[in-house]
Length: 209
Image (cartoon, rainbow, N blue to C red):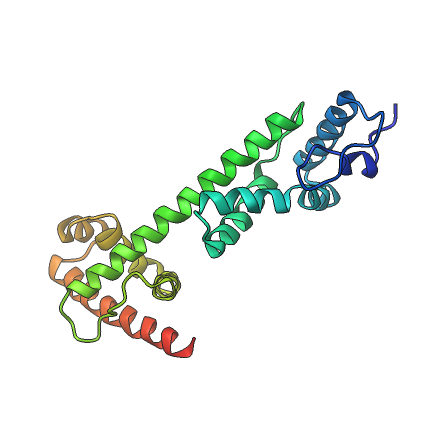
């Protein structure tokens, strides 16, 4: 028996598509999903394009609900979800199981993004509470959070480890000192320098936006 055609893939049970053609059976739909997911697991580019055509809008609507209507967060979660699907695709025997798997990936992706954003907002608040005159005032502004995340990502690896260890993971200066092979005084000096560097970088990004 030849494999399902592209037309049979288009007839999958999705809310945004028209009703399946008369005579289409559940076995045909199941066969289409098996064929599609096997090709996805094999890393076929065309299979991934077909998957996107079928599930892109449906996943976005689901993630928009998860993100409580925040379109920016939903779009970001969708892009990460698609990448995770491409990396971890595996065969499925029916569409319900496949959709449940996609929802689980999307939900976990959205939660990971929310936790990451919360950590960076917390870091902004720590800078705000530091009492330094140039610290950002609107610590919960989306643009500030994005600017901070970008700025931290641009640091040298050793500096990023110090900043994230101190302000995102709650490590002590003593612990950071042992890990970095530096004196506690040297770590404190580096943290002060990095805070100033990040603040200037953030403000520069905000002015340029």
